[in-house]
Image (cartoon, rainbow, N blue to C red; front, side, top):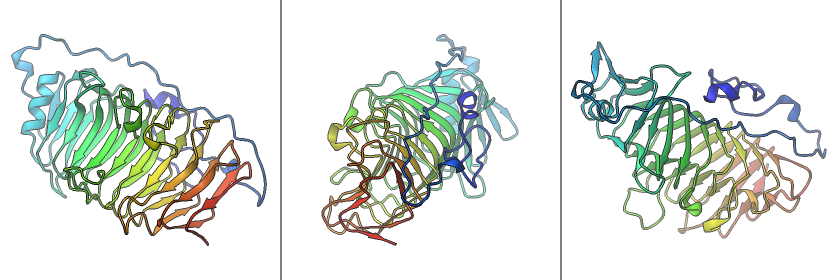
Length: 364
């Protein structure tokens, strides 16, 4: 489904991403110094209703266990998937036939650096759909093990889409996450050195607009989870429309988050729970580069990127470079650094001309 609309998006200059997903940035968007241009009329890819068949309610007992073939565990039913997630071993691939798998699916198994665990669709052009029970509870998929690869799938109809809990060195790639009650993807409970890339996130915050982040890194101060979520990467992800909170929220005590080659569509940011920017950085040493954002006339947006100090010593030493912003309101800032936060800015551009930086931002 994602493949149908992605071919219509212009290739990002100098970067061509893997088949099925690209991040938007056309070479024609380069500015002359001081030039002013109108926000281009580029619309986010439309969401198309899934047409995948549902898994039968009355599954046969024979379908509960995965079909083994060398290193492949093949599934076509929800109960088979649940079993596979519990019994998978390093190096195995869980391969899902086209269809909708309903449940809150979870695994606590670790892969290894040389033998990661993979969960993927049998047919990337007709991806399997992991659907929760409702947007008011649960999750589509939770992984509490290291070294996983999650690819070519759709996640929907749950309070949270994909949860990585203390899941290090995990890769999420070529997925779509939508119709989620709260946040779409959460790097939580110490998850570090993990990545989401080449993916599409939209329509979050269905039951809690102030908690409808696209990608949430870490945990708020006082939460019971390990807040030390370090060196995670968010790359080539299309965000929006209708992400009701920040597209990316990087929490205090998170270090070294990398956000690059992403596209942000501002339609739908709600202002609930102070959500009024594409990215909110409360951690340290984040690198935000080569992204493109469109305000789309959303007057809720105050800054494209924000920094906040939740705890002393946090929200500092963050870098923003080579980002391109189409901000329809000249009063909106590219970077707003609040309280004692700090950032370095290099070669960021906005159109039309307007406010650039406020707070402790060093321009290089």
